[in-house]
Length: 228
Image (cartoon, rainbow, N blue to C red):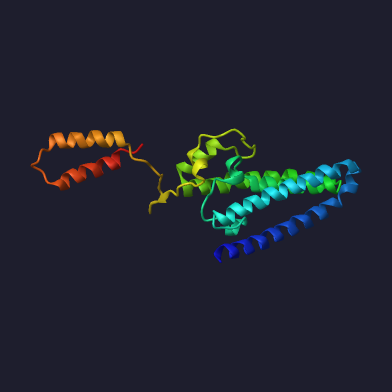
């Protein structure tokens, strides 16, 4: 039931965004007379293809958000969990790329130079939004896991080769734990080799005279020190 409610919200939000940008594009189209340039009718076929590919990409991203991210494509109702599967295994912003492909395809189909030019400032705004808000927010939330994902997957240009990023094999990022001071504790893994050496040293230094409690404390001490 919850998934169905998310899907309904996503349909409403995407329909609203589609109508909004369609309305803006049609307003901008009236500027074509100022340019005195008309595109060839041959651009309509690639325009239709671009719209189909862009719409497919947007729907695939929305499906990932709903089924795995527990959220919607809207900024104000974003996914609660970051999921690096589907299109997000190849590029970090496939939703925005799909939207831009829709707009470019619409411009080609309508043979409008003004709509095509509209994609330039729109891409700039999206790029600034990603740099100044989205990526810092995700870094604070997911810590080093998201940073590793960013190193493995490009922002705008798809990487078609297989990545060594472990998050892409599991499809999920670990959430960093925020402290009261605002410091983020990144997800960590215990160095098992150092743990075994420390336990051997403890056993050698404290023969049966000390209680098991101190042996347990020694292991916990290494767990806090032996972070890989």
